[in-house]
Length: 330
Figure 1 (tube, rainbow, N blue to C red):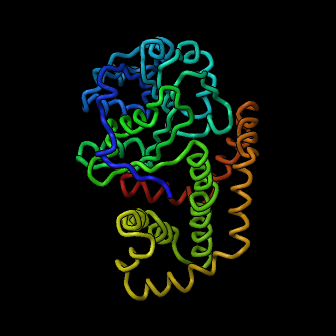
Figure 2 (tube, rainbow, N blue to C red):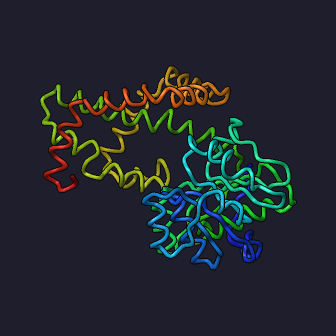
Figure 3 (cartoon, rainbow, N blue to C red):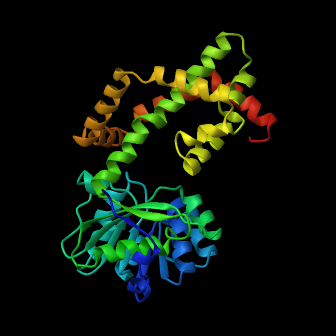
């Protein structure tokens, strides 16, 4: 069973005399940097010269090139996209990863598949918020925490777990309602990719199929889209699941709704569905998906762009656009 850590398990003092370099000022980078600074940490930003650089400057940070930031930092938070991280690591960070430094990841992907191989003598830790970047900052400002997965890949100093928990505390995970759950780079990669390859992707295609069936039955596109997701009820159900639990949230529905959920929902989950899930896990575990995605990037993302074109050409997108303009969302 995984260990669960709370505020009492973490001490920010281990970071107090360190320079923390946040590489990448995107959604996670900005939120984590601001939270760390608000908690009294010495934070500098490493970024390319783009709009994110300008935003970091306007937020009052010292902003430098990625290599210079890596050179000056004792603790490095690598918060750039998985697909660009290996090259950035090789070209700009690895030359400055001297013994005694700490390298923190928010995703297990590149370590799991060996695309990034940190040198010996460096602590390699995982602090992976189960929260979008905006939520990391918004919850912090509300004095509320959020869950993170924490792990240690390389404990060169003997204090890697202390660093992982201190970073977790610094970004706000241990405020009321939050915690850190013991995990690993491999496990984080497995559950993250599995979610994307199973329920999350299936939900989008299922909603689209529901739209098609309803419109075939004569339901107007506007009513179908509102009922399926545009009203915001779907988001409220997700929030209720997070607050009350997968099945207990059903108590917020009418008895008719509860009965329909429990009698019909299970009919869609067959042994074939579970076998597809198992196939997804195998492709994640043996690296097939990582190799496929890597090759896709090397070829210039042809399938990626084709898939986007196919999805956006579906009638649901045209009808959605008209409705969302009326609702003032576009």
